[in-house]
Length: 114
Image 1 (cartoon, helix red, strand yellow):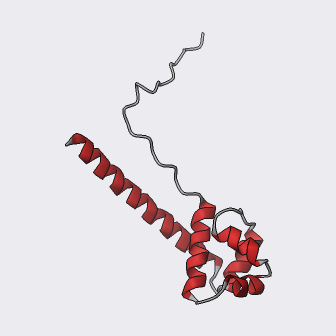
Image 2 (cartoon, rainbow, N blue to C red):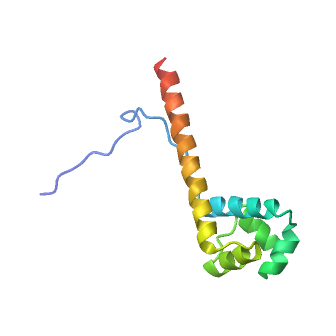
């Protein structure tokens, strides 16, 4: 016969709720916007070179759209970065956000203990 395993209840869990992890599309959009700003370009300029509409590029940058790999490659090319450089930058951003969240979590735990 199968063993019944009780589900944890809210009162059983004393840990604070975790903030949701950032989505890849949000981190990608932030990185693309930063690269575009570093180049001093308008949205329309980058979008034109990438072959997408300014509205679509704006939605990518704001994390609203989940672009295809072809679209990501087109925008990366328009910003004169390789997919490897872009991906490595997004990974670095996600790692730094994770570190910031971990530090904030430790601070919260110490303040609760005090």
